[in-house]
Amino acid sequence: MFSGLGAPEVLLIGLAILLLFGAKRIPELARGLGQGMKEFRQASKDIKKEIEDSSRDIKDAANHEETSSKSN
Image 1 (cartoon, helix red, strand yellow):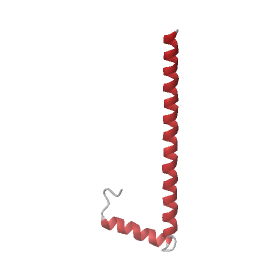
Image 2 (cartoon, helix red, strand yellow):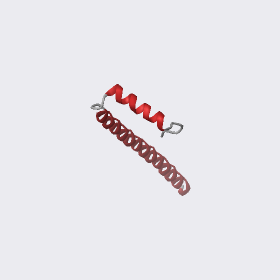
Image 3 (cartoon, one colour):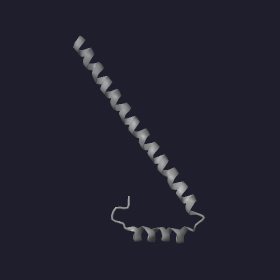
Image 4 (cartoon, helix red, strand yellow):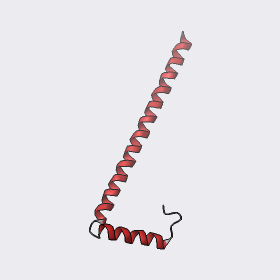
């Protein structure tokens, strides 16, 4: 995640966040970030499932059409 960032840079970023938001707000912000990531992953899964279902429906329709045209 922090490719190219060393320990001093990460420490400086952490200190800046601590100064900006205060120690009491950091757990609250972390919870909100975690919840947002969870919702994003769930939405991604839902979209992927919808695309796969649509793709399967299209393939089934094409196979059904191909089968019915061969029987005629």
